[in-house]
Length: 123
Image 1 (cartoon, rainbow, N blue to C red):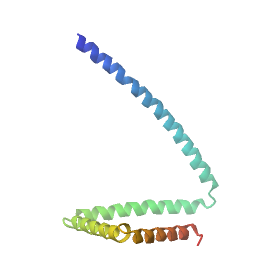
Image 2: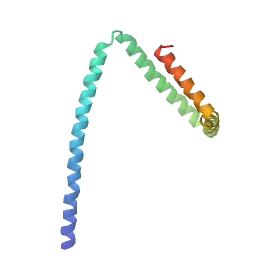
Image 3: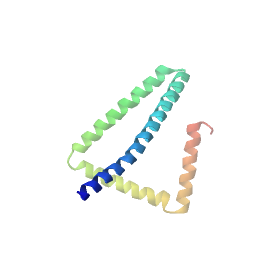
Image 4: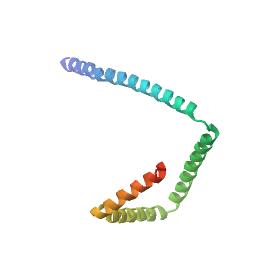
């Protein structure tokens, strides 16, 4: 009998953290509502909505197409392993070229900054 009582007490004390988790999910839903209102405000501020919709649709189609291509490549028996070896080789080259030595890290940093300036249009 005592074993059952201690088990029921343990179950009772375990349920308390679940109540805390439930209240944190309420906070998450409030954050989601704020997110939706922010997105709605930004969408209302967009002037050229058809272009944004076209680009979004194009991005979705591109992701779907890439997924299809990757699935097709993955179905070829030996090709995924070869691609994995190519990826590992490129990763090793990148680490050796840009991350291993201080001069390479500095070059990578300047290249990244130049790309940021091109994207931002401040160049």
